[in-house]
Amino acid sequence: MHLQFLGATGTVTGSKYLVTTGRARILVDCGLFQGFKQLRLRNWSDLPVAPSSIDAVVLTHAHLDHSGYIPLLVKNGFRGKIYCSEATYDLCRILLPDSGHLMEEEAGYANRHAYSRHSPALPLYTEEDAEESLEYFAPVKFGKRFAVAGHLHAELARAGHILGASMVTLDDGKTTLAFSGDLGRMNDPILAPPSQIERADYLVLESTYGNRKHDPADPMDLLGKTIQETVARGGLVIVPSFAVGRAQTLLFYMDRLKQSGAISSVLPVYLNSPMAADVTALYRAYRKDHKLDDAQCRAMCNAAKFVNTVEESKALNMKHMPMVIIAASGMATGGRVLHHLKAFASDPRNTILFSGFQAGGTRGAAMLGGIDAIKIHGEYVPLRAQVVQIENLSAHADADEILQWVSRFRQPPKRTFITHGEPEAADALRRRIEESLKWPCSVPEYLESVELG
Image 1 (cartoon, rainbow, N blue to C red):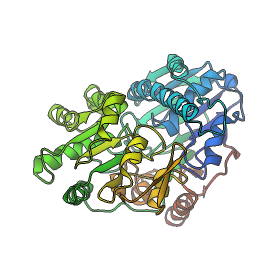
Image 2: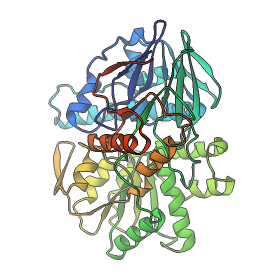
Image 3: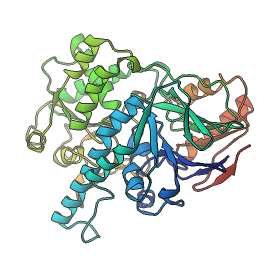
């Protein structure tokens, strides 16, 4: 078995792992690079392997940094099956066409306003490309071993993190290779903790929060306090949010904050993401994948006014009044939240609230870093609003939780590869596992190849 790292090295994006045996070639995850320009340019470069030569793809979950390259893979010749959990498939049916649509919109906006260096600006792929790629999906059940390609078999286990998120274990009859995917929290308010893998010959382990521990304070209290303080000075709160997972957690907390009286029951809350609205509805279809009962699902779905049309979205920018706007995307890299930032970031009464990890090179990371102006659609917008972050709203396990999960292996893997983390986080987790568990670990480089077995 041969493993090559085509992404998620030195960064939390672009997750792609090429696994090759004598009879099969598959990808585990097929994600987009995000953040720094030099990373995003990789999306436009050819893969080191021809897409037509790949037999299958196995997805850990639906977030675009793990699934968003699939339409381009199919467009460029891939014709195999794409295996994932049932909920991941339904999420990809929402996320991938929306991703293509946004890319077309952004290219069109750049062409109309002539701020792109390319003439014409083109989307990486289109909504139609994304729709066509969905034909190759083959959803599978958790805990059921299935044939992937050649003599490679796989099994999915729940990883927490978001609806449908999976850990993947591959085996060729001789060697087992496990991928943690993105590990969820041990005490998430909505999702169950990650399942436990007891043994694997080799492990690929995420390290998003590999050098940090989440604040033990209740994130709902921190959220309520931030909203109260902003409303008291006559401002509004903009929450850039991932449409899958984070938006639903925020809605869950908004309902509880209003029910408890921590924030006003009449404070307007808007979910400005048709995609997030569709995702929220899926929680009713996948009751076994989370902790909420029917009443809690209904309350979460009713916690905000859903904004569907472009006209409704534009109208929000005219409302300079206390309210909460939850809008995609989570790192302020695109989507409707950019138009809200253009409208409201210059007002010091307002708050921009980030509710999770911000990858290097993203607007979110730059704003938290203290910049005084944001570049949006080729123009600089003064940043005078308060910028805050509540990291413990994250759906990623922190360093202690990751160590807790790996320490339950019955025997150590022959080698653990630390990926999906910024360099400092990945190396900190490597050192911690090596020192506390005495496991052999390494932090692979981009395009590095290793022989397993």
